[in-house]
Structures are given as structure tokens and as C-alpha cells.
Amino acid sequence: MLKVINVVGARPNFMKVAPIVAAMKERPARFRPLVVHTGQHYDAAMSDSFFRDLDLPQPDTHLGVGSGSHAAQTAAVMERFEPVVLREKPDWVLVVGDVNSTIACALVCVKLGIKVAHVEAGLRSRDRTMPEEINRLLTDQIADLLFTPSPDADQNLLAEGIPAERIRFVGNVMIDSLQKNLDVARTLPTKEQLGLTSIDYALLTLHRPSNVDLRESLERILDALEAVAAKLPIIFPVHPRTRKTISELELSERVISIKNLRIIEPLGYLDFLNLSAGARLVLTDSGGIQEETTALGIPCLTLRENTERPITVEMGTNVVVGTDTEKIISAASAALNGSAKKALCQPPLWDGHTSERILDALDEFAVIQKSR
Ligand code: UD1
Image 1 (cartoon, protein in one colour):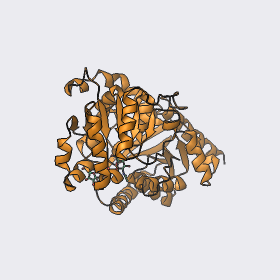
Image 2 (cartoon, protein in one colour):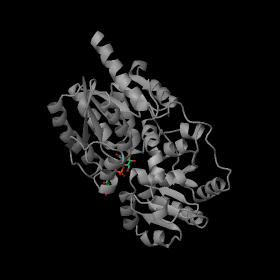
Image 3 (cartoon, helix red, strand yellow):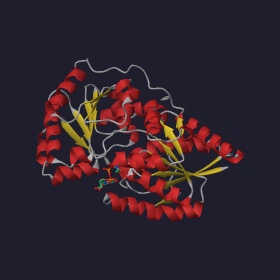
Image 4 (cartoon, helix red, strand yellow):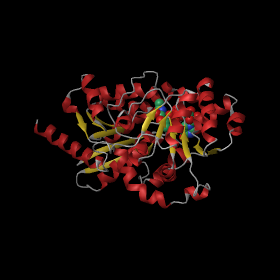
């Protein structure tokens, strides 16, 4: 029996951990999953609704860390997670993605000699100004087992000197959640409630510090959005960080003045999936949404200068356009007049069975260790 602490902290973690915990519950003779929520995200819309939508069991432990500077948040997670690990003595701690909770919990475990598995390992934007890139690099250096979503991630890890026996290419676990929930999401009245049933619309998300914390970049993006919104409504579920900086930068009136830019509260997993699956176009600076749009075959414009998910560009529907106003406008026009990128096919192992492969690998690793 393997006791596994599954760590969740921020919004993009929930859809990665939910299918893994569900798969563990289907193998009760072999796995005993616990869920620890660090509390990095704490709003109902950023956290609670995801437990409901994804059928994720309520956390066994909630660390209640909340917001803070990177150092304060990371340190608070470490301080509060350490006693949980000492009390529970898990066989494995499983961390996902690239948020502050990911590196914080991995670092606690490696110092205590507890084995850590990192899901979504090996992705690299090569942009060290992104806090997530630092979290990725460090987590991958210290984790015992690295589960990669795409072959480029394996190459990145090998190039950083990580031994091949620590790397397992298992595919994209977010697609497990997407496949499991898409049919239900499509039946929801999300579009009707927004009056979108018979019209084309675009869907927008923005939260990267490099886009929303700086006046110049935010203004460049808003100028582009104004031009795109002249062609079709843009639905914009606003991240709390973005809402805050729009107000601090005194850009609220500018945002409200853009006709056809419809600002709504952050959506739950299923409502967001309903809207993304039906959109003509998605504009985003998120990592996960680049992958979901590729899986759905929906054109995606990534409003960043780089991506850690190049397979979504090579095989999927993603175009990395940056934040130049004219580039965004012309890429959006191309997408809307039908000359957008089409998906070549689904990336390998984005098949809805990644969580099973993760469990198989944990099992196999335990057997190898025992025989040593
Ligand atoms: C974090 C992750 C990012 C991920 C994003 C998804 C890091 C370094 N960043 O960024 O990789 O893409 O989550 O959303 O871990 N806030 C609330 N309520 C909440 C959460 C946040 O109001 O439930 C506000 C607070 O003002 C907070 C700010 O948002 O200070 C930023 O939150 P934080 O968790 O620090 O980073 P995110 O920008 O959400």
C-alpha cells in the first residue's frame, strides 16, 4: 500500500490532481491518497468551485496560506507543510505544475528524505523572469520521479543532466479531466446565461504579472482587444490579480469603455470548459488553456513572448503572438477569417489515460526499490 499526499495550491492544480486521486481511489488495495490544500488560492471562485466541479475530495488538510510576496507565500507553505509530512509519513508526495506551492512542498520533502513525484515536469519557457520557470527548474532538479506531458519535456530534462531513469513520459493529465467532463460541460446553460447561443464570441483570460502588472503591456493589450471586440464579443472572466491591478493602474474606466468586452467573475471548471469549447477564438496568457484549446481544436492566441508548451504550436491550434497591439489584431483577424492554425492531430498520450500511467509508474518504482 502506497500512502500518497497529493498537493493542490492554486487554480491550475485542481484539474491535474483530480483524475490522479480518482484513479488512486479505484485501486484501494494499492494506493491511499490524501489531499493537502496549501490555500495559495482561497476564493470560492478560484478554489472551492473546482472541488465540486471536478469531484475532488475535500482536503484532508488545509494549510490556509493565502496571498503574500513570493518569499512569504513559499515560506509559509514550507512551514505549514513540514509538520503534515512528519505526521503522515507518506511514501510519496505528488506535486503538480509550476506554482509556488509546487516548489515549496517539493523542497520540504527532499530535505526530509520523502520521495517526491512531479507531474507536468520538464516544461521550459526559457524565460527566467517568469516565477513559474524558476519553480519548474528547481522542482525538477529535486524530485525523484518526473512525469512529462510531451517529448520536448523529456529532452529538456535530459539536457539539464537529469538521469533518464527518473523521467517517465506519461502524457497530459489535464486532458484526463477535460475528456471526463466535456460532455457534461457542453450541457450546461453557461452560454444561454450570457446570451451567447446564436452568436460568435471570443474568450479571454489574463493574469501573468508581465501582462497585467505593467501599464504599458496592459494598455497595448487593451488597444488590441478594442479592435477585436469591434468584430465579436469578448468574454473576459477576470482573475482577482488582474482586477486588482486594473484598478491600481487606474485603467478601470478604459476597460469598461471597450464596447463588447464583457467582464465577468472567474468561472468554475465546467462553465469555463463550456465557453472555451464553443468559442471562435481564445486569447490567453495561461499555460493550461493553450493545451485545452489544442485538445478542443479551438484557435488560441497566446499573449506572451514565449511558451513552455511548444507542442501546442507544433501540433495544435496555438499561436504565440506576444503583446504587440498590431500583431494581436492581425492574428485575431486571421483566426476569424478561417486562416487560423488547425490542429494537425492530438499530441501523443493526450488520451485521457495519463493518471493511470502515473499510478503504474509509481507502482513500478516501488517494486524496483524493493528489489534493490
Ligand atoms: C498563480 C501561479 C500561476 C498560475 C495562477 C493561476 C505562482 C507563482 N503563480 O498566480 O502560475 O497560473 O496562480 O491563477 O504560483 N488572489 C485572490 N484570491 C485568490 C488567489 C489570489 O484574490 O484566491 C489575488 C491576491 O491579490 C493575490 C493575487 O491574486 O495576491 C495573486 O495570487 P498568487 O497566488 O500570488 O498568484 P497568481 O497570480 O494567482
